[in-house]
Amino acid sequence: MSGKRTTSGRGRGPGRRALVSGGAAALAALAAGTGVAQAAGRGGASDEAPWEPVPVPAQAAVTEYQVPVAGGGSLWCWDTGGKGRPVILLHPGSGSGESWPYQQPVLAETGFRVIGYSRRGAYGSVAGTRAASDTVSGDLNNLADHLGLGRFHLSGSAAGGPVAVDYALSHPDRLLSLTVSGSVVGISDPEYAALTAALRPDPFGDMPVDFQELGPSYRAGDPDGVAAWLAIHERARTADSFPQSLANTITWAALETIDLPVQLITGDADLYSPPSVMRLNAGHLRDGETHVIREAGHNPHWEQPHAWNAVLLRFLNRHH
Image 1 (cartoon, helix red, strand yellow):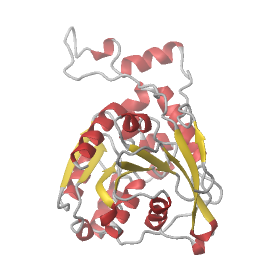
Image 2 (tube, one colour; image 1 turned 45 degrees about the horizontal axis):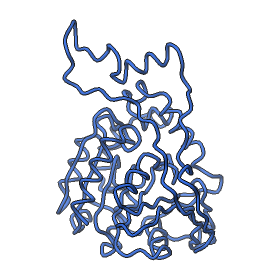
Image 3 (cartoon, one colour; image 1 turned 135 degrees about the vertical axis):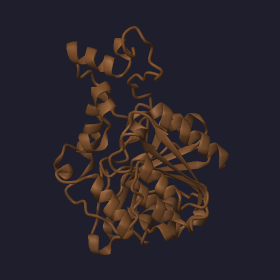
Image 4 (tube, one colour; image 1 turned 90 degrees about the horizontal axis):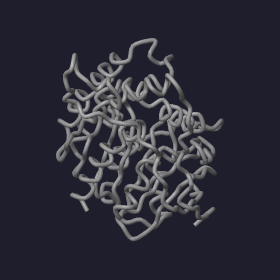
């Protein structure tokens, strides 16, 4: 396999530096529910379970590859290996193959072969020539072939969601299950496009990316986590990146043809795909289920990893 090298378990997870101190740290603790702010009213107890910022766990050992793709590009890929069922994680547009430090060791420890990669033009990957490039699902299929995968689980978050759905439409025989998290799914029906555009009026596109993609409770409760997420975002895009095409036109009618177990996940504060939009899309699935992660925005896998991982693992273990 091209460009293969092995890294230790201390590899690609971003470190969580101490970026706050003093009053800011105290405020974060209160906002996260670790201090007296947990109380509801005078002397009352909150019925909401508090959450605490989660440190990045030690990473499993991985083998890294550069997987060649059409047009002179290559995809940076990491793979925990092993004989377990493969799970491929598709990153948000704001991230890269670095976006999964909370998932990689947890899935590996429970027996899965965990694989992540950066799409063309994202961190570690080479975009190649746009005119000669394949579709995003074509690149994914090439990667799966390169790694010798049979059937596998596929999970796409945010902008990784349309890639996952596109792949399910083109290669349903390769998949064991499909998870789409925090994503507008790529639906092109005009009424859906109008609905989602109305959720984010101008000047939404000019707002900071952490405001757009991370929920307010998380931003207030875990400033270190926000800083680590932003560091991944800032490394994610390379100068030669370009948008790739889908192989399919994704519509509600197309969703209705997917004959796979599908789960949709979203954060209760997701500004792109709030719970009502997620349920709207779920109504067009043959075999779908939905989950809402509390106190999370567009990246619940990062903001509330314990809750998100538990939902994913229950689903994967039912569809081996």
